[in-house]
Length: 232
Image 1 (cartoon, rainbow, N blue to C red):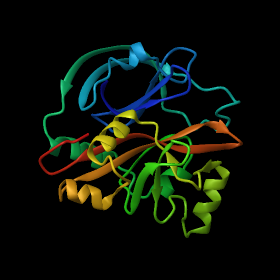
Image 2: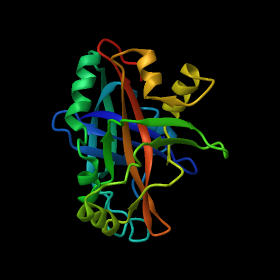
Image 3: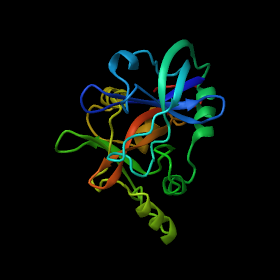
């Protein structure tokens, strides 16, 4: 598989969530170690941002009923090996790949079930660190504020929820980038325009394991791409 990582996120303990897509068909994949729902630092270090990787994968590894009773994390595949790497050729190529994977109607993607990874291009967002030191994205209107009653009902059936305080971000690459670029305050869509008029932000959203009877949305990866440049 020609794999392109779209998320590398820290988890509790030593676990790392690596997730991305098969660059040839857009299918989401989360490589995992046997009997775990993550990989570990030695394995995660083999994945490079903005590179294609040749993966050898085993079969699906279903999670236990305690943390995934609805089977949302259907993308988990056993990682056998990571080999050849090739850098993405240009900003245009990365932009086109992200656009192919993008969830253009996130509410439909979330309510469909049997899925835990999504790609969002947010409109009207802010990012900052809360009073407890946790990095979060806040979206306006709220991410799960959907007008259609049927869609809202489906989200409830899928047990998907978002924190009212904002979506926590566990992507250390984004945190480092944001701190270096905008050390004095929150990041917004205006911040991106000041960086470059063509810059766009894409966020990889992941569902957590079941916690308090809900799958909580997490920002597990972030990408900043413009017409002629890749910043992240």
